[in-house]
Length: 120
Image 1 (tube, rainbow, N blue to C red):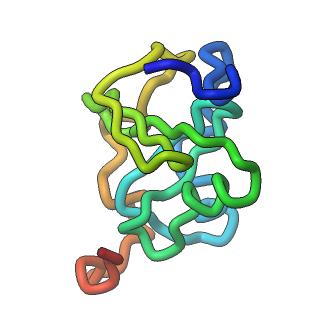
Image 2: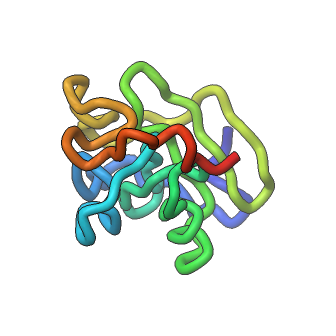
């Protein structure tokens, strides 16, 4: 994997913005899985989540790469080319949300019927 066609898109020195989706946390929402922008560290919720903030971040900023922010996962997604990369540069720690934080999460904000609201 290269950083991208323009030499931008991944900054391994930038830490994540937090342990959960920035926008969901701001409004008391919840997420299914989390994605971390490889350029600025923004943590957003995945496309199966109700709000799809990681994709929204790409649309707003043009930052093409996200890495899974789930424990044990290191794959990248390139929004610009719709390509999956099994691995890539190691990003600044932490590389996932805390292992004790459930998925979906966060604890206490996930509705009982959460599976019915997932986007596919």
